[in-house]
Image (cartoon, rainbow, N blue to C red):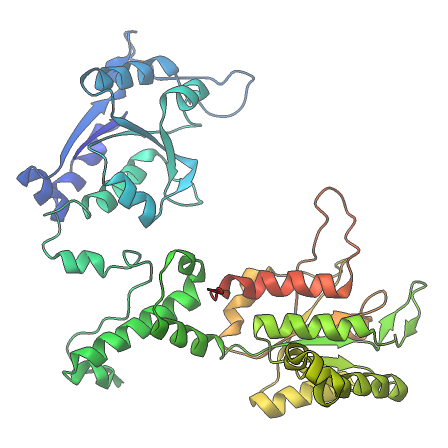
Length: 432
């Protein structure tokens, strides 16, 4: 493979291209890298490559002429050379992109700096725009080195053992399992016994499980591109069952339209829809907090109908969902039930369509899934009273309207959106 780099700092690459496996690959001729100083493609005596942006603004912008001449010079000998602009605006580099680029014979890397390159070059003479992450560095040189190293690893002969490349993080779609070496014990910390057993089949099984677990906890989005075996699926299900997620539907104390503190009525739809939502996403329970005895009695009759009467025979799938519903006369008793079941109090996640408190994202909440039981606290009527919100540990960011501030959703809709945002990323099962 040939890689050409267009840069104003060719000296930046002097040391990195001489060391390690990358240096050896260049020595062996497995990879060829040419450095092009952008200033060589200027015509004025000062070798100017940048200018002030039209319309004003901070910083400088790379002029179009030098880049056009540099690209044209390279394409004269190879019209199929693939031109890549390293930029924060590009698609974030992934192993899948790297694998595709490693199949090309000739890459041209444009190293941007300042405020970027003239848009006419980017729009008309660049084949692909790539970013190494959602952050900004001084220039595209460091990003070019990242891209070169990732691609070079996949060129046959660059890495001595093909197996070591295939088992790297991301190569199989999963993060790599933990690695240990001598001594067996360090400061009281021991190497897992399975790795000392000599049973290679069990060791491979252990490592696969660990890869699945680490990926699930740290980068679950990677699973969308991974083919899982039946054994893998069993491991994933077993791990996901450790999540202890509940829904609390509060009927008291809540506000009515006038701001009065009331107890709202239990809605049939809420019981059905929230229980089906809970069963679909693998929640541990839907806890209805209702202090009014007559309301609880109505709900109990409904639950009984679907659990043991005609409803159970008519629709067994509904029975499977409804069994997750439990009724409590107070929030304290619902919390005590979880504490008794799980051995610790749950984290209470407050929700409020009109936020009065600092909120966190659903992504941040996922960190707690593996550590603590969690209860999503939802209010009926016109929302939770302050005394309930005061007891919550965290508050979820509201579900904002897309075009304006209107965000008046039913509690069932809000629950579905919140739960999917938190847990949906773990939805790997598909019907065949």
